[in-house]
Length: 468
Image (cartoon, rainbow, N blue to C red):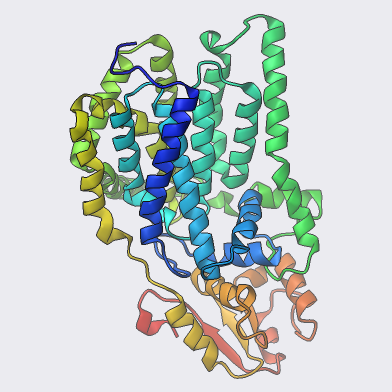
């Protein structure tokens, strides 16, 4: 390997990664949303917080690792509750960037790695997710750690299995990484031993690690037994547990985008992708890709499999019929960071201009809108013992946060009219509010007629003036 690409040792790479973690965390702390927000596809934030602090379970697949870490962050002695969960996102992004730096230092000089990692930190996609409450930066962190292990000279099968198992508990799209895991573990030049016993031993270690990494899934039945009002599904049975962890509820969204809309999607996302690193960044990434492909067989082969993983992510997101599907592309920026680092390698100190440019370009795009300004005055206006009907994730999850997590208006009852279609939701409502009638079946009319309470409706709309 030539001087330009000569990397640091394991400890040196981790030390440099720790520096980049600190720099990126500082950026995120300075711009962290101070309270609950639904900006940047973060409507789930209120639900995630409410589930974590009440011992409940959020929407499928349940995100057990996020729940455990979220509960730890909720015990921090400073900041508002929502701010602490926003901090969890910032820490996840910063840790992921640190592992990215440690990985890239094996192949690229420090100035190129630092500039590439900070440029990644300043992309709108990662920056926006790092300052709000969501699950994506935790998944980013675990995948970055997995990539660090996979790109080592001798990938450790146990750690590969462990991190892959954990990554699946943070987002199910991590299953796609089996492609690069298989290449890394079964490439003859990446193995310590090539005999049959060596292969079997490696597979066993991977399986052991995967089993341990998957253990967080087992906390979901335990949480369902508790008294939290925020519990999706009924994972106390095998069928109910599988319904939850397999995200069966969202399967109709897979490959559900009409062919007539795909062209418009590609054009819109192409423009958004161009904004991530700006034109100059993508040109440098293209140059870096050419340099990687002209390198040694192992580096080139692994990179080609990473390109295959990029293609899988792209096809999945194109066909996934959810408005927030673009955030699922966050791991793609992680996979392309090596190309950017190799492209920046020949620029010397000028490489640092790219992250500075991106911070200047994108700073105005990370402003958030707090939900409290609308939700709390509305809650304060409600008559005593109101039955509050909500509809849509934005309205329901905001109310779950303020009512269940912060404990505002304990006298009211919040009912999501859409979730009444699920028997597990009605059973939990009945368990917490035994005086409610009409919960034997999906019958909103009977529920309202027999409530003997003031009935109010709330739907969170895009126009702040229309939110009541």
